[in-house]
Image 1: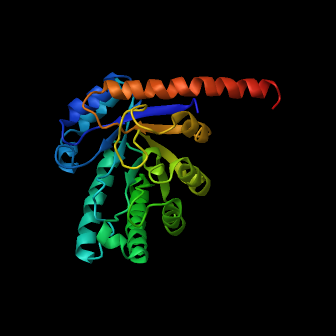
Image 2: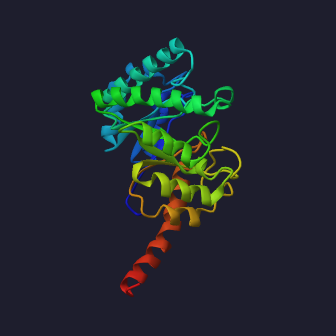
Image 3: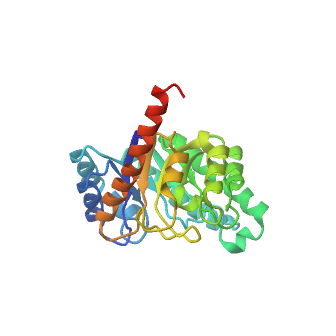
Length: 274
């Protein structure tokens, strides 16, 4: 678990470059850029490509891309769906320009569509197949994030997408994964989807609603959670919704402080031959 690369996510309601610089200035390894209205949607990002690339290069960092959670990529009206996928393609094109290796998308699952679960699944498969096709053409890996609501509220629901969309991989949102299911639901995600998990979001909550709190400010049992994901190596976005970037730094420090004694204990057991 020591080989983690930590990043933060910008707030699309605040100035794009100010957000990016504040995340990099506290020592994060990358920014997960949410390409989202009103202040960091595609047109805004396109105008600042050079600034963004200069900022990450000066900090020896990099960018990943995150799409709007509300993008209607599985809408049952074809013209609406085509429009959403057209916007998604713009996001993928800007991902390529930013040299992002991946872009995270969410299943489209509002309550009115989720009430017909099989149709919601079918339409999301159609949408994600389109995304993966365009992603391959542009060299951007498509990741699906577990949203844990609507027609995609459990590990088998995300597994369905992974099984029916060739080339789709996963962003495991750890904060989402424990809502209304706790540690056992997280374990189920790791068991069912572990091979496809290549990125993670980490944030705290009360285990019943999506609060995006700093680590330690909610009720998630982090020693147990971090123990479960101890074999993961890769990128972790601290998706903490706060205007103060210090909470990102503190969250990273808390995670590392929990991991250090766990790693020491594992090393001691290894030396003893356990």
